[in-house]
Amino acid sequence: MSKNEESKVAQLLRLVGKVPTAAQIYQALRAQRYSYEPERAFVRAVDNPKYVATASPFRPGRFGPLPEMVGGDGKLPFTWVYCATDSLVAAWEGRMVLNNFGPGSGFHITRKAEELGVLMSIRFVRPLLLWNLGADHSSRLGFQDTISERDHEACQLFGVRLREAMLMQSATERPDGFVYPSHRVKGYPALALADWAAKELFEGAEIAIERFVDSEIYARFRDDPMRTDPPDRDAS
Image (tube, rainbow, N blue to C red; front, top):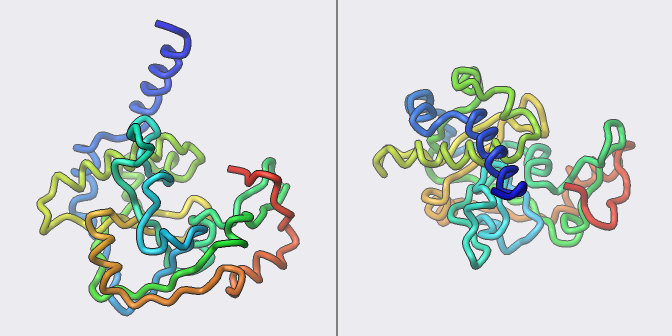
Protein backbone atom coordinates (compact mmCIF):
# COMPACT_ATOMS: atom_id res chain seq x y z
CA MET A 1 0.00 0.00 0.00
CA SER A 2 1.39 3.40 -0.99
CA LYS A 3 1.78 6.24 1.51
CA ASN A 4 -1.06 8.07 -0.22
CA GLU A 5 -3.36 5.06 0.16
CA GLU A 6 -2.33 4.65 3.79
CA SER A 7 -3.15 8.30 4.39
CA LYS A 8 -6.61 7.89 2.87
CA VAL A 9 -7.30 4.81 5.01
CA ALA A 10 -6.17 6.64 8.16
CA GLN A 11 -8.39 9.61 7.28
CA LEU A 12 -11.39 7.33 6.71
CA LEU A 13 -10.81 5.57 10.04
CA ARG A 14 -10.59 8.96 11.76
CA LEU A 15 -13.88 10.07 10.24
CA VAL A 16 -15.66 6.81 10.99
CA GLY A 17 -14.63 7.14 14.63
CA LYS A 18 -16.04 10.66 14.89
CA VAL A 19 -19.41 10.23 13.19
CA PRO A 20 -22.41 8.23 14.47
CA THR A 21 -23.86 5.55 12.23
CA ALA A 22 -27.10 5.97 10.28
CA ALA A 23 -28.81 3.56 12.71
CA GLN A 24 -27.67 5.61 15.71
CA ILE A 25 -28.84 8.85 14.06
CA TYR A 26 -32.20 7.28 13.28
CA GLN A 27 -32.63 6.13 16.86
CA ALA A 28 -31.76 9.56 18.25
CA LEU A 29 -33.65 11.82 15.82
CA ARG A 30 -36.64 9.96 14.40
CA ALA A 31 -38.92 11.36 17.13
CA GLN A 32 -37.25 14.78 17.36
CA ARG A 33 -39.37 16.66 14.85
CA TYR A 34 -39.27 20.42 14.52
CA SER A 35 -41.96 22.31 12.64
CA TYR A 36 -42.02 25.77 11.05
CA GLU A 37 -45.46 27.09 10.14
CA PRO A 38 -46.25 28.49 6.65
CA GLU A 39 -46.30 32.13 7.77
CA ARG A 40 -42.60 31.94 8.67
CA ALA A 41 -40.29 33.62 6.17
CA PHE A 42 -36.93 32.04 5.30
CA VAL A 43 -33.92 33.44 3.50
CA ARG A 44 -31.60 31.73 1.03
CA ALA A 45 -28.36 33.33 -0.15
CA VAL A 46 -26.62 32.17 -3.32
CA ASP A 47 -23.80 33.55 -5.46
CA ASN A 48 -25.23 32.03 -8.64
CA PRO A 49 -28.84 32.98 -9.51
CA LYS A 50 -29.17 29.73 -11.45
CA TYR A 51 -29.38 27.87 -8.14
CA VAL A 52 -31.87 30.02 -6.28
CA ALA A 53 -34.47 27.26 -5.83
CA THR A 54 -32.20 24.26 -6.09
CA ALA A 55 -28.68 23.34 -5.03
CA SER A 56 -25.76 23.22 -7.42
CA PRO A 57 -25.15 19.60 -8.47
CA PHE A 58 -21.41 20.33 -8.57
CA ARG A 59 -20.77 22.11 -5.25
CA PRO A 60 -21.02 20.06 -2.05
CA GLY A 61 -21.96 21.97 1.07
CA ARG A 62 -21.16 21.52 4.71
CA PHE A 63 -23.22 18.34 5.02
CA GLY A 64 -21.96 16.57 1.96
CA PRO A 65 -21.68 14.50 0.05
CA LEU A 66 -18.05 13.52 0.44
CA PRO A 67 -15.71 14.26 -2.51
CA GLU A 68 -15.20 10.51 -2.95
CA MET A 69 -18.90 10.17 -3.86
CA VAL A 70 -18.76 12.56 -6.82
CA GLY A 71 -19.42 10.86 -10.16
CA GLY A 72 -17.19 10.83 -13.19
CA ASP A 73 -19.17 13.71 -14.66
CA GLY A 74 -18.48 15.79 -11.56
CA LYS A 75 -22.09 15.65 -10.37
CA LEU A 76 -23.06 15.04 -6.76
CA PRO A 77 -25.22 12.00 -5.91
CA PHE A 78 -27.44 14.20 -3.71
CA THR A 79 -27.73 17.79 -2.47
CA TRP A 80 -29.05 19.81 0.45
CA VAL A 81 -30.71 23.20 -0.09
CA TYR A 82 -29.51 25.54 2.67
CA CYS A 83 -31.72 28.27 4.12
CA ALA A 84 -31.91 30.35 7.29
CA THR A 85 -34.44 32.29 9.31
CA ASP A 86 -32.76 35.66 8.61
CA SER A 87 -30.41 37.28 6.10
CA LEU A 88 -27.43 37.48 8.47
CA VAL A 89 -27.23 33.71 8.93
CA ALA A 90 -28.12 33.08 5.28
CA ALA A 91 -25.23 35.24 4.08
CA TRP A 92 -22.68 33.46 6.27
CA GLU A 93 -24.06 29.97 5.64
CA GLY A 94 -24.31 30.74 1.91
CA ARG A 95 -20.63 31.79 1.97
CA MET A 96 -21.33 35.26 0.64
CA VAL A 97 -18.92 36.42 3.31
CA LEU A 98 -15.82 34.50 4.40
CA ASN A 99 -13.30 34.81 7.19
CA ASN A 100 -9.77 35.82 6.32
CA PHE A 101 -6.96 33.54 7.44
CA GLY A 102 -5.84 34.09 11.00
CA PRO A 103 -7.74 35.24 14.10
CA GLY A 104 -8.49 38.94 14.20
CA SER A 105 -7.82 39.37 10.49
CA GLY A 106 -11.45 40.13 9.68
CA PHE A 107 -13.62 38.92 6.83
CA HIS A 108 -14.38 39.74 3.23
CA ILE A 109 -17.36 39.78 0.91
CA THR A 110 -16.65 37.41 -1.96
CA ARG A 111 -16.32 38.73 -5.47
CA LYS A 112 -18.98 36.36 -6.74
CA ALA A 113 -21.41 37.55 -4.07
CA GLU A 114 -20.93 41.17 -5.13
CA GLU A 115 -21.17 40.39 -8.84
CA LEU A 116 -23.93 37.76 -8.92
CA GLY A 117 -25.24 37.18 -5.40
CA VAL A 118 -28.94 37.25 -4.56
CA LEU A 119 -31.02 36.93 -1.41
CA MET A 120 -34.25 35.05 -1.67
CA SER A 121 -37.14 35.55 0.78
CA ILE A 122 -39.32 32.43 0.89
CA ARG A 123 -42.69 31.55 2.38
CA PHE A 124 -43.64 27.92 1.89
CA VAL A 125 -47.30 26.99 1.54
CA ARG A 126 -47.16 24.18 4.09
CA PRO A 127 -45.35 23.57 7.38
CA LEU A 128 -41.77 22.34 7.23
CA LEU A 129 -41.22 19.12 9.15
CA LEU A 130 -37.55 18.76 10.08
CA TRP A 131 -35.30 16.64 12.22
CA ASN A 132 -33.73 18.79 14.91
CA LEU A 133 -30.00 18.93 15.64
CA GLY A 134 -30.50 21.84 18.04
CA ALA A 135 -31.28 21.78 21.78
CA ASP A 136 -29.39 18.78 23.20
CA HIS A 137 -29.94 16.42 20.26
CA SER A 138 -26.38 16.71 18.93
CA SER A 139 -25.18 16.06 22.49
CA ARG A 140 -27.35 12.94 22.69
CA LEU A 141 -25.52 11.74 19.58
CA GLY A 142 -22.10 12.71 20.95
CA PHE A 143 -21.61 14.96 17.93
CA GLN A 144 -22.07 18.38 19.53
CA ASP A 145 -18.41 19.42 19.32
CA THR A 146 -17.80 18.23 15.77
CA ILE A 147 -20.88 19.95 14.37
CA SER A 148 -19.62 23.24 15.80
CA GLU A 149 -16.04 22.89 14.57
CA ARG A 150 -14.35 23.33 11.19
CA ASP A 151 -14.12 19.57 10.58
CA HIS A 152 -15.71 19.81 7.15
CA GLU A 153 -15.19 16.19 6.14
CA ALA A 154 -16.69 14.83 9.38
CA CYS A 155 -19.78 17.00 8.84
CA GLN A 156 -19.98 15.81 5.23
CA LEU A 157 -19.92 12.18 6.34
CA PHE A 158 -22.50 13.01 8.99
CA GLY A 159 -24.72 14.46 6.25
CA VAL A 160 -24.37 11.25 4.25
CA ARG A 161 -25.39 9.14 7.22
CA LEU A 162 -28.16 11.53 8.25
CA ARG A 163 -29.63 11.19 4.78
CA GLU A 164 -29.39 7.39 5.04
CA ALA A 165 -31.23 7.56 8.38
CA MET A 166 -33.99 9.71 6.87
CA LEU A 167 -34.41 7.24 4.03
CA MET A 168 -35.11 4.51 6.59
CA GLN A 169 -38.52 6.12 7.01
CA SER A 170 -41.34 5.73 4.53
CA ALA A 171 -41.89 8.52 2.01
CA THR A 172 -44.98 9.72 3.91
CA GLU A 173 -43.09 10.01 7.22
CA ARG A 174 -39.74 11.22 5.87
CA PRO A 175 -38.72 14.73 7.07
CA ASP A 176 -38.21 17.63 4.67
CA GLY A 177 -34.67 18.07 5.95
CA PHE A 178 -33.12 19.18 9.22
CA VAL A 179 -32.48 22.26 11.34
CA TYR A 180 -28.99 22.66 12.80
CA PRO A 181 -27.00 25.19 14.86
CA SER A 182 -25.14 27.53 12.54
CA HIS A 183 -21.39 27.02 12.64
CA ARG A 184 -20.71 30.55 11.45
CA VAL A 185 -23.29 32.49 13.50
CA LYS A 186 -23.29 30.92 16.94
CA GLY A 187 -26.63 30.54 18.68
CA TYR A 188 -28.73 30.79 15.51
CA PRO A 189 -30.46 28.02 13.56
CA ALA A 190 -29.99 27.15 9.91
CA LEU A 191 -31.85 24.69 7.69
CA ALA A 192 -30.93 22.08 5.12
CA LEU A 193 -33.77 20.84 2.90
CA ALA A 194 -33.48 17.40 1.33
CA ASP A 195 -33.63 17.09 -2.45
CA TRP A 196 -36.75 14.88 -2.25
CA ALA A 197 -38.66 17.76 -0.61
CA ALA A 198 -37.08 20.90 -2.05
CA LYS A 199 -38.62 20.76 -5.53
CA GLU A 200 -42.20 20.48 -4.28
CA LEU A 201 -41.65 23.08 -1.56
CA PHE A 202 -40.21 25.70 -3.90
CA GLU A 203 -42.77 25.12 -6.68
CA GLY A 204 -45.58 26.40 -4.46
CA ALA A 205 -43.62 28.94 -2.45
CA GLU A 206 -44.07 32.72 -2.36
CA ILE A 207 -40.66 34.04 -3.41
CA ALA A 208 -39.06 37.50 -3.57
CA ILE A 209 -35.52 37.94 -4.93
CA GLU A 210 -33.18 40.84 -4.18
CA ARG A 211 -29.65 41.48 -5.40
CA PHE A 212 -27.23 40.97 -2.52
CA VAL A 213 -25.54 44.33 -3.11
CA ASP A 214 -28.92 46.08 -2.78
CA SER A 215 -29.76 44.48 0.56
CA GLU A 216 -29.55 45.90 4.07
CA ILE A 217 -27.31 43.07 5.21
CA TYR A 218 -24.82 43.84 2.45
CA ALA A 219 -24.62 47.44 3.68
CA ARG A 220 -23.96 46.15 7.20
CA PHE A 221 -21.11 43.95 5.97
CA ARG A 222 -19.71 46.67 3.70
CA ASP A 223 -19.52 49.20 6.56
CA ASP A 224 -18.15 46.80 9.16
CA PRO A 225 -14.68 47.88 10.42
CA MET A 226 -13.51 44.23 10.25
CA ARG A 227 -14.25 43.94 6.51
CA THR A 228 -11.30 43.84 4.16
CA ASP A 229 -10.99 43.68 0.39
CA PRO A 230 -11.30 40.15 -0.94
CA PRO A 231 -8.08 38.32 -1.84
CA ASP A 232 -7.25 37.55 -5.44
CA ARG A 233 -8.89 34.18 -4.81
CA ASP A 234 -11.59 33.96 -2.15
CA ALA A 235 -10.44 32.20 0.99
CA SER A 236 -12.13 28.95 1.88
